[in-house]
Image (tube, rainbow, N blue to C red; front, side, top):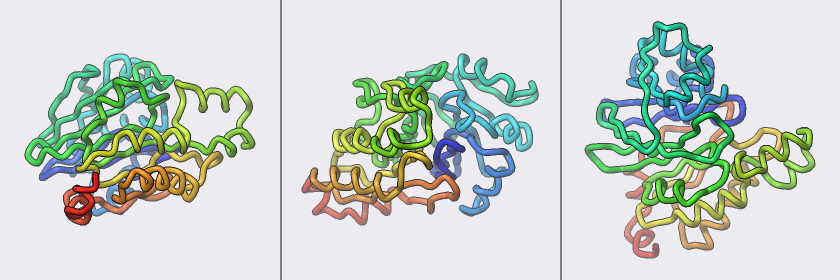
Length: 269
C-alpha cells in the first residue's frame, strides 16, 4: 500500500509483469515518489482502477494518467462525478460493478459497497496464473451480505479500520461529521473491522492489512490490538499490519506469507 488514510489512498497490486494501482488518492508527483520508494516507476503501472470519486481516492488519477499515458478504469457514474480531474486526453475506460475485467495477468472483480459516494465499489484482484486473490476494501459503510460474499476466500485482505469509537466521540470533528463516519454509509470502526475480519477467516488467508486509519480518531496500536485479539481468539496467527498515511508499506509477497503459515496453521483453521 503506497499510503492510506483520509489524506490519500493507493494500493499497488502486482502479478508477473502486470502492476496496477487501486485508487490514486495522492498527487501525481507523490504517487511517482512513493512508487520509487518501493522500487518501481510510473512507467511500470499498467492501469489505475478507481473505486469511487472521493478526493482521497482520485486526486492524482488525471495527472498521472495524462503524464504517463496510464489507462484509468472507473464506473461511468464515478467518471461523471469526478469529471473535473480530467481534460479529455486521458485514456478513460469504464467498467460495471459486479462484472469482472482483465488487465494483463490480473483480473479485477468489483462489487458494490454502502459508502456515501456516487457509485462506490471495492474490488478483489486475482492473479490469473496463480489464482491468488487480494481484497481491497477501504470504504465499506457497513459489511453487507454482498460484500461478505465478494471477499470470501481472499488470500490477502486489505480492510479499513477507520476509527476508535471513543476517540471519534471525543475527537475534533463536529457532531455531523461524527455521525457520518459512524453511520452505515461511513467507515468501519476497529471493533466492526475485527468482527468482519473474523468472519472472513479461512485456511488460505495469509495476511490482513488494516487501512484507512483516521489520524484524528484512531491509533495503529489500537487498531492492531482490537483486530489482533479477535483474530487470535479465532485461532488465526497470520500476518497483521496497519498501513500508514505517510509512507508505503513494504512489498508483501503473499505466497511467502502462506509458506510461513505452515501446515499447522492451515490445519488449525
